[in-house]
Length: 224
Ligand SMILES: *Cc1c(COP(=O)(O)O)cnc(C)c1O
Image (tube, rainbow, N blue to C red; front, top):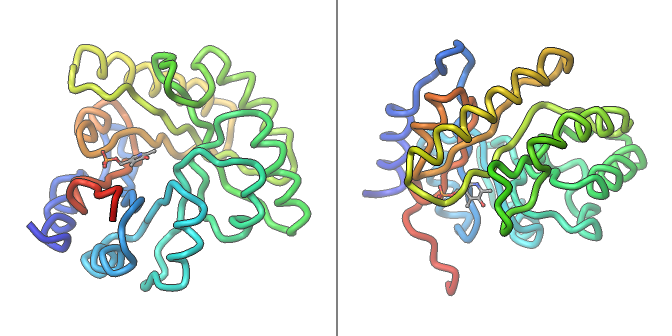
């Protein structure tokens, strides 16, 4: 199937709203993809794209057409923040306090407010970054006090498994955490959770933003 066909299929399959009636965002994860491939996805109806690497984000920036929302989902080194300030519509991957502090001060200096999600390491996987669920509330409160940032919600990294008995309770726990924090955080709108293999389950459990790469572009070729 072509990229265009994949996007059309997803736009049909991904529900417009989740069970809470919240709109569901379909974000294309574009790491390793060429501007041509990304532009095909946008022409087919994708309105939000997300990169993992600062270098790729910069290299492709001017070649992207159609004015999509541009987001960042990768591990961000603090010395690279300067290349992104003012250009990223939503940072999904604020995964540590030092990054939040630097992103805030750089944003203030540039006269912008950066919109962010707090990345949660669901299930405390050793190989993944992010705050533990147990420290999420303290992190949100501390980061909410920083002047250059506006916290819009949570991004959850779930384990790479297709075992529903592992994924479903974690996804449900993330939605619970999201609801708990949203009760006192006014701008808390997004729960970014779900990728090509598990987006259906995640939306069923209350995600309202899914990040999809492979199901749009096919398997990634890291050697290209
Ligand atoms: C690559 C990536 C995705 C998309 O993964 P697919 O399985 O290809 O859909 C989602 N989120 C993050 C953080 C990623 O790095």
